[in-house]
Length: 420
Image (tube, rainbow, N blue to C red; front, side):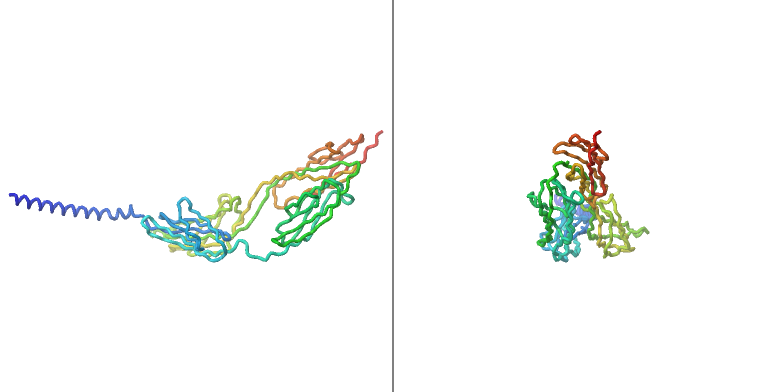
């Protein structure tokens, strides 16, 4: 009996083991596709967009199913690892040339994919021979229309020069050098002869010009005229920059059951900080499997958008275009008022030269305040030009009038009226 029971137990164990094996095998066969579908990630696809200006390149990561990766900029610099927090990286190359930039990505299983783009980079500023600057003219405009100029007096200096990158002025009044623009305004407080020197620089090259300014002592009876010129407006800077846009598109085939073409993808280029885009021009393109690319300005000039139309039947396309982006920056300006000073004989006439109107400003507004002093005493002040304004002086009555023609303001103090 014991032998029979032992054989029965062995047979039962074998049967249960076979059933368990069949069940586990079936379970594995059933679960394998499910595990592959749910647990196993898809293969990574390396993709990125490129924009560059001069030697600075902007790479935008557009890869899919990538858990990690790195950038190889192709210039011997260290690899830069890909991070989810930094989808856009900027790299500046040291010199012009041809470089192959590469992005390598992998998923959590270690499956890899990569994409390479060849960059043809040129310097932002093409090498050129530094030419010697040349001052063509140096104009001096001071108070009055002939005759002596009395101190204090404001002069306007305007230079016209070729190949000048910087202007350095020495007005000979002991106040040091003035580094600025080609047009400057200067007031000489004391009588004397001043040697005004201008140096125009371009690198180490320079050219010089000088003028002699003579300022006389004021008459015994004279008034000091002071004009405050307050300008405001919008400074407009317009520039053109070349941008190269590169983008790879894959998996474009439409659903074979649908007659519709694949959706048209879009790429975008942002305006430089502080600028808005006003126009875009296509210089050249080397596109593959794209029938059409249309560029539009969007987001009130903050970006341009390129809408691509695929070639029918293509499952892969490349966008590579060189664009000229026209950008504009507007900055509201309201500098400190400019003070223009002159001496008005009693009686007599003086003509003052006001600062020029900036050529690159719009919405320009100017206010002029005229002040007339007898020594330190303010005799008259107004924001509108006087016309027959009575002006008592030393027990007599004079009339003050003013007229303006462009940037020339003329004031006249008429002879005193005879008392009855």
